[in-house]
Picture 1: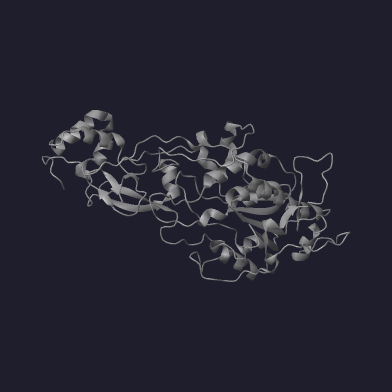
Picture 2: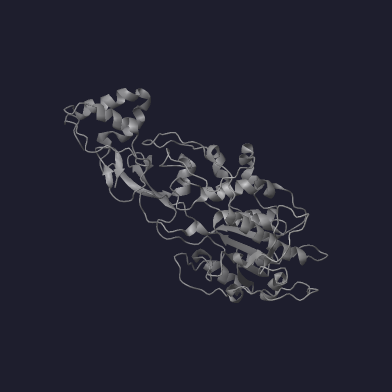
Length: 453
């Protein structure tokens, strides 16, 4: 514990987003005479902000910054964002949107996003994770004592995006839907096939939008955007904003089920001050739950034919599906492509050109050969695609991953230590969270009232 009558010397001035301690506090201490006592320096700082800032100032006062009164604890990143704001620890930073759409955008629709994008089938809503779609309208409930900078609401900065990769994914989803629509019977669409789309967030959203005529999307994005986010969740959110009007349309009659995942959810994290760990694990229904819904076939969609192994957090679930006698197949979204020999008709819509399985109208029906899940025999025999399709021989096998568990399938997988958490500075006396410590190295800096690394 330092003494108030000791001369004050500034060892370092920190003025970085995410470092605990407000800028006005540093300014007040900086302007104090070099030979001033610590008590005088503190009074100078208090004079700069008035009594209204007294409580926050005390939280970061030099006498309250010793290691024995504060410690760094890990807290779940999403919990901290919900409590203190989406850009917790980086209040003065924002996000950028690649491929920003120039189409008219109804800003008021953002508040309806979590409702517009929920599954149409009420029974599927138990598996729907609306966290990402709730973030634009969320309001912080507390202000960090040591970092009171105002946070701009995410809804104010959100912009829809549309990229070339999203367009390809949309057309691929539409092609898959056309296969199911063509196999429709007198009783309606087949519901014995469930699809798991595991593409990068914006492309997964676009794939789901294209497939929505035949599939009821179930989104599983359990994180929020952050200016330093490991997962670029703001891009996924922006893609959802672009397709929101399509998802909000009513779809009469029951559809098959499509679970929508963000492949970036397990992105590498280097544990330094430039990143915020907003990763999460996928949550899927148990094998028994799918079986009880009448599902007998599961199609796992990955980006390209180079992806031949499921994501680590899905291994337990996919193995459990296979053990329950569900037929599990893998398919690359890239297997769908336009038929370059097909002439554009005069009445073509903006959805031209259509995509086909194997890149040809003649090979489109070969999907049912690679995945013999029983549609009526086609009138014209399809031609085998010339492209590689290693996923058709896929069979999930148990393997050790950081997310392996011996618990029942369908449960939330365990996570590695520290996964999806953010380090925060906590006052031991009160338990109050003073702010984010985005660097996990270094120590609580006594002179600056911050967490230096």
